[in-house]
Length: 240
Image (cartoon, rainbow, N blue to C red; front, side, top):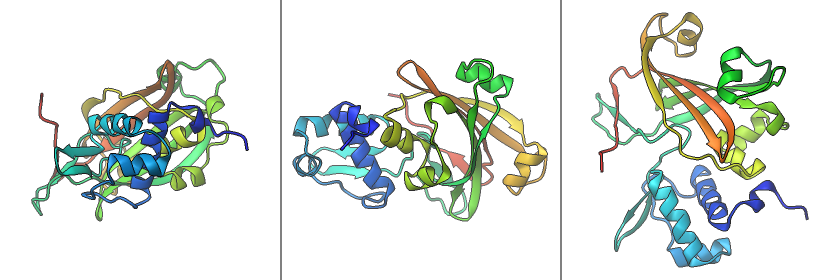
């Protein structure tokens, strides 16, 4: 049987992919304690040291929380959303993680700004992915993501939905694990088209986020997000 691209990843990366896949599928929900390192190692078929490195990386990204003598817990973080959970002012609930809904995916010509950010040549095409983020019934953000089509020729909506989003898909189907990337925050307002997707009025104040993600030296994604945080706050991590 031919190997999948994910099989070419280092073993600890494959272990990360295995664990995150089961989290996204709902096997291990937010607040759930993961099996022990030894049990995970036996289940995945790798060494306990490999599992420990995978768990350490996922903890560093905020996907897991480890408590000495207690266990390793699922936080609910989705790497596509980022490391900032929500605080609901109405319910006073904290550490809420919004859920993603894929709206569309289409092959498209590359606008100049996208070509610049992805460092593509003239005439190279891109995938354009649109999605919403919801906190319960409240829509809190709209995402646009652009990815280089030549590197991901078979990308489709079914793949995205079955793999729980772009980052999981890139790792599982194409062998690309995205490196942590800084996010830029801007203040602004919604244009009419974006406002309609967020069911809001044009020119409503919003926060715009932009992020360029790499896998090694390859640029794989430029993502732009518009967030409406009425009665909701972003929780920023404490400095260390």
